[in-house]
Image 1 (cartoon, rainbow, N blue to C red):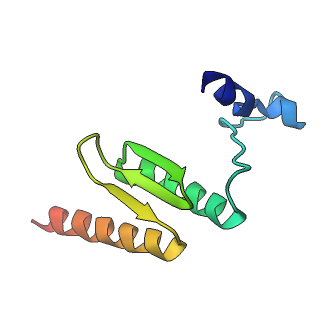
Image 2: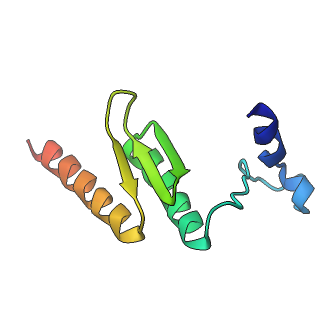
Length: 98
């Protein structure tokens, strides 16, 4: 598994980007369809925004997990992600109002 991660852990310079440019970590997910790549990208944003501990792709689903003990949220479409985002947004607003 470690060897596989090393293969996919690319540096921006290896892809032709200039070294002085600021780039984050780059990954290639060739096993994902373009639709799932977009969904994973957006889910990673939600992960950071709402404090999810895990975000991964498995069996044509994108999965998020808030903590080690919480249940897994599986998504297949951007609409599923939008519903999750709406749920967390509402909970944050109601928590602030109380």
